[in-house]
Image (cartoon, rainbow, N blue to C red; front, side):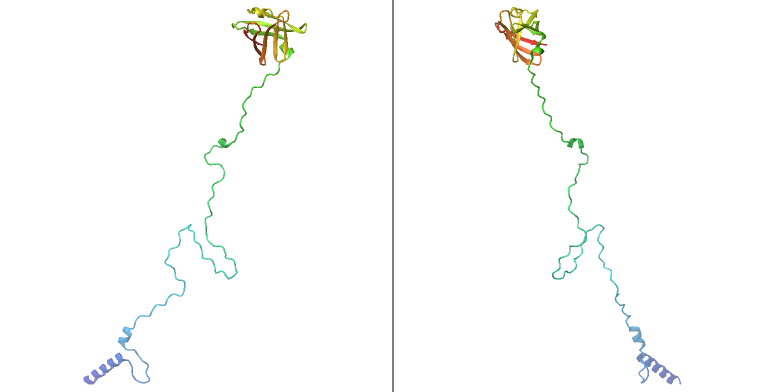
Length: 211
C-alpha cells in the first residue's frame, strides 16, 4: 500500500507544477510561474509634472512670450517688467548751498556826479585862500555892487597882489578877482562843489580857494 500512495503523491506534485490540464477545469498556474511573475508597473502620473528647474530669483525681469498674432492684426506690446530709462534728478543738489545759486544783478560802479555850476548867490561869503608858499588867508566876496562888479576884500594874505583885491565877478564857472582900476589879480576855475583853483595873473603863483 505504501508504493501506490507514493505514486499518487508524485502525481499530485506533478499536476500542481504543470497546472490542471483536464478538460472543463480552469487553468491554474504552476507554483514556479506564480513565483516568477514580475511586479506590476506603476502608471505614469496623469497630472502636472513639477519641473526640476529652480524658480527665478525675486526681482528678476521675466518677459513672457507674446500671444500668436492673426494676419492683419497689430502686433501686441511685449509683456513683462522693463526698467524705464533713468533720468537725471531735477532740483537742488543735496548738500549744495542754495544761497550760492541766487543770481544777483551786477552793481553799477559809482560815478561821482559833476558839480553843479556855481551861482553868484552861492559864492557870497568868506573863503579860505591858500597861497603858493603854503600860507592861508581869507577872501570875502560880497553882494555889494561896485560899478559893474561886486565888492571883495582880503585879510592876512602875504602875497602883495592878493592884498590889492577889491572886486570880483562870476564868468561862467570862473571867479575873477580884480584890483582897483579894473586890473585882473587872479582867475580861479571850479574844481569841486566848494573848491576853486587857479593862479595870479602877473606872477602865475598857484592859488586854491575853498569853503
